[in-house]
Amino acid sequence: MEEGSVVVEGRVEPDHSPLVAVTFQRDAHRKEKYLEAEPKALGISQITMSVLNILCVGVFLSKGLGLLSTDLIIFISSLLVVIAGSLAVAAQSLHLPTLRACLGMQIIACGASICNLVCTLVKMEDIYCWQHGDFNATLYEDLCHRAEVSPNI
Image (cartoon, rainbow, N blue to C red; front, side):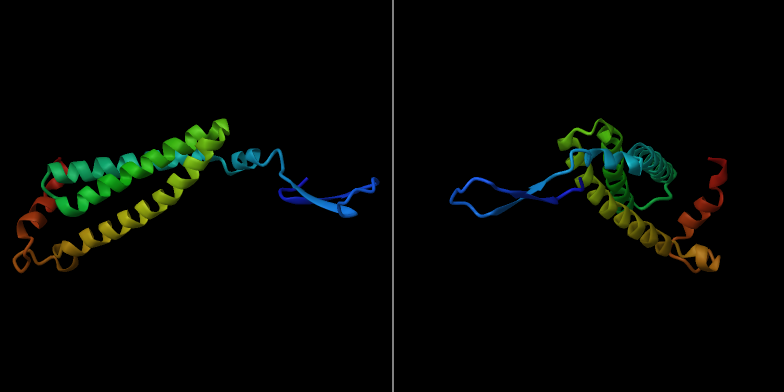
């Protein structure tokens, strides 16, 4: 039966109850529907992309090309996405508390990803030299010069 389906039962005994009783039953296989969305692939993708993001932020900070204020937010948000990905992989067991934790963390991961996107856009706007290429007129002359020679990391 479908989730929340209605079952109508007729009564034969002359009790003081109504002639027809309506009860709701849950689908016993609703947890298996979760596996159709391939949560393991989602979790592995989230973990991989977040680790890449963390490594990039770490490399840029180590070379002096990052801004600590935005990079710290990106680092923390990426860790939240790694946790959400780990829970998505762990939810393969179909243990109900793990499924609930996975859903909650996926919602938090969506917010963290939006935060990462905003911080990345802020970082891109702060680097003036990418727009004009005029290194002398920018406040970020040293940053632009280091970014230009950074391929020999």
